[in-house]
Length: 151
Image (cartoon, rainbow, N blue to C red):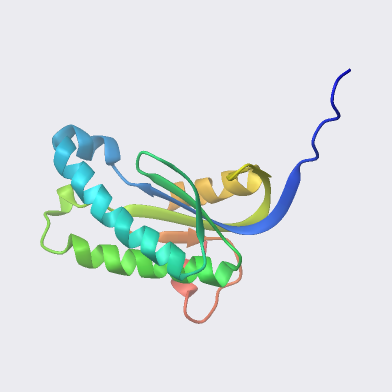
C-alpha cells in the first residue's frame, strides 16, 4: 500500500541570492587566489547574514542563497555586504576584484529539509542576475535609505 504524499510546507520569506560576477574568468586567471579571496569574502557575508537574522539555505561554488524573516533585514544585509566587500577590494586591480551581485525578493517558498525551492527563489536569482557587479537589486517599495536599490 502506498504512503500518502507528504504535504508541501510553504512559507513567506525574504530571499537573498548572491553570486560572484565573472567567477569563471577569475578562476581561469588564478584559481588558488580566487578561492582564497572567495573564502575571505564569504566570511564577511556569512557573518553579516547571521547578524541580520538570516539563515544560509544553500551554497554552490560562488553562490549563496539565504532567507530572512524580514525584507528590511535582507536589504540592510545586502547593503552592508556590498559596503564591506568594497572595502576588502580596495587596492586590488579592478579586473581581479571579486564582486558579488545580490538580488532580494519576498515571496512564497517551499521547504524541503533545509532547502528552499520554488518561484520565490527563481525571482531572487533573476534579480541577482540583473544587478551590477558589487550592487544589489530588489523588487518592492523603496525606503528612504534604500532608494538606489530598487528596480
